[in-house]
Structures are given as C-alpha cells and as structure tokens.
Image (tube, rainbow, N blue to C red; front, side, top):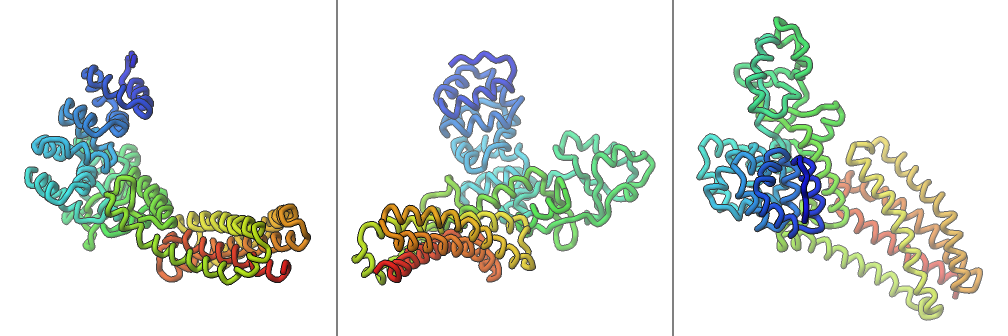
Length: 460
C-alpha cells in the first residue's frame, strides 16, 4: 500500500478508511513506518484510536507498545472501553499500570470496569495510592449513572476570589484540565455555591468579586442520578456540563458535554435493544454466556405468545380446510400490515417518551392522533388489499374479507403500538421493555384470528 501524505491528519484519515476494508495492509504499513505512526499518534489520538479499533487485537497491542506512555494513554482515552480492554490485556502488568495512571481518571475507570475482578485488583494495587483511591471512588458508581459518567478533572475556584485572581488561577490549571467551559465555585468545605462560564470570567473586570460574576445555585445532580435524567437536564437548560455533588452538596466532579452526548446515544440504543427483547446493556462485545442469559427469558416469552397465536389459528382450522391454500397464503399479509403500522407508532411514541415529549396529561391526545393516522392509512391500504383478495380469491366476498381484515388490523396495530409503551410506563416499567414482542402478539392474533373470523362469516 502506498501512502505518501505529508500531514498526520491526512494520513490518519486515509489509514482509517483503508483499515475498514484492508486491515492487514494498514497493519503492515504502520509496522514498517514507525516514525509516521508515532507522529500520527501524538498529533491525532482520536484518529489513531479509530485505526486501532479496526485492526486485530494483537496488532493493535503491538502498535500501542511502540508509543511512549503519554501518547498511548491518549489513544486509550479515545478508544471504546470494550475494545481498549482487549488491548490492555495484551500488555505486561507494569506498562498497564503506567498507562492507567496516565489516562484521564474517568476513562481509566471505564477501562478498569471492563477487566476481570482479579486483574482489576492487581492493576489498582500497582498504582500510586492516591490514583488508586480516585479510581476506586469512580468504580463504585454504576456506569449508567452520573457518578459513572463524571470526570473528577474539574476547574474549581474558591469563593471570595476576584475575577482577576480567578483568571490567573485558571491559567495555572490550563495544562491540567481540558474542559474549562464551566468553572465551579466552592466554599472552604468544597460545597458547590456557584458556577461561572470561562467567557464571563474573561470579560469581567479584574477587581469584581467572583460571587458577583457567578450564577448562584446551579443545576446539579447526585452520583446515583440516572444518565437519562442527566441528559434530560442538560437539554432542558442548554448546559454543556453538569456538576455532580454528594448528599452534603460537596462537589465530586462533572458530567461533560461529551459524556452527555454519549449517554443520549447509549440510552437510545438501550431502548431499541429493550424494545426488541435483547438485553438493554448488551453489545456485540458482551460475553456470550451473559448475552445468551439476557435474551433467553424474552425468547421464552416470545414462544409462549407464538403458541397463543397458533391456538387462535387452530381454532379456525375448519375454515382453512374449506377454503384452502389461498386463505393460508393471504393470512400473513394481514398480520404483516398490522405489525408494520404498529411498529411505526411504537417507534414514534418511544422516541417521544425518551425526550419527555409524552407527558401523562398528553397521553390521551397522542393515542387519538395515532389511531386517527392508522385509520386514514387503513383506507387506501384496505382497498388495495381487497383488490389483491379479488385477484387471488376470485370473488367479491373474498375481496371484502381481505379488505375488512386489513383495515381492522391496521387500526388495532396502530392503537397497540401507541398504547403498549404508555401502559408499561403507567405500571412503572420501562416503556421500551420488549414492547415489540407484545405488539407482535396483538397484531398476529388480530391479523390471523380476525381474518379467519371474517372469512368464516363471509366465505363459508
């Protein structure tokens, strides 16, 4: 592979694109161009992380070993923990400890959380006690909580300073802290009393007191606050970060804008997985036995519901025997149309509920709107389905059967797709909790059973 680009950024983009289709070629290139790899890793750790994520674990481990501690730690900060931990496990214990110590505390905690308990304890034992204590404090929080998302690298100023003194202090903190968008003001007990934006601080007169510049009683969250609430607060108030305080109001850290965005994405993917009956926390990197255990209960529920549908069809076996193959061929069409209509409403409602767009007071209005949409769409679809029934069945009665069953299932499917998440929320459950499985049961029972009932009345 020939890559002769002068700047690390351009090289990184080219390598990243190539690694997705020819990882072996990129591995060979980086192995034989050590100086370029080191320059790239130093200049663009994010792109370097993307490249390593596309390569085999052994290759990524070897390339990371070629770098100095600072550059390698910068890359691990940018890698997904599920992949970064695979690379970490291929390194010797001493280098692993050095890398963890050099990483951002929150990212290091995420990586350690992916390690086996024995390996995690060994790494923590090899670290400086102060660093180890900080990481243990982060590891005690659930990954999907504010405590699990927060970083302890926060710009903190003491109340009572002037704007000029505060600005000088931030100059000293600049090399230690990356995110200076918000500066938190604390008292002598480190209790949060205010927040000031870096912009407001810069433009304030040097002699003005910090308490005159800061915003008092800022929005804050506790460590146990769920990430869904964290992202909701950030969006509601237009914040780039949220301070995290304990029960006494002591500042523990902050959830950065980047962490908020990632939490929104994670919550959306979790809701999608839950709606399909997969484990909400499952990813493609989840251990096989754990993933199988998450899916199995819902597979059993799905089997039970499928048996209900089979029982409905079996009860109508007489009409199937009388009318024969045409009826059997068209039954799935009715069920499929209802399922699709319900899935559309289900997706819209769950999405809106995720951003608090469907309050309990609006639930009735949402239900009526969605059913109306289903009814409007059912008319042209029902007419087309009736035409199909006429072609296949050859009689007007068959056309009426097909059209009537399709219209009914479309309306009921839309109703179910809207009502199921609303009912689950009313019961105090996650609205996305296997909603699709319950929807499939309703649309299949109505689709197959309703079609056969109408056929019994009109075709026998």
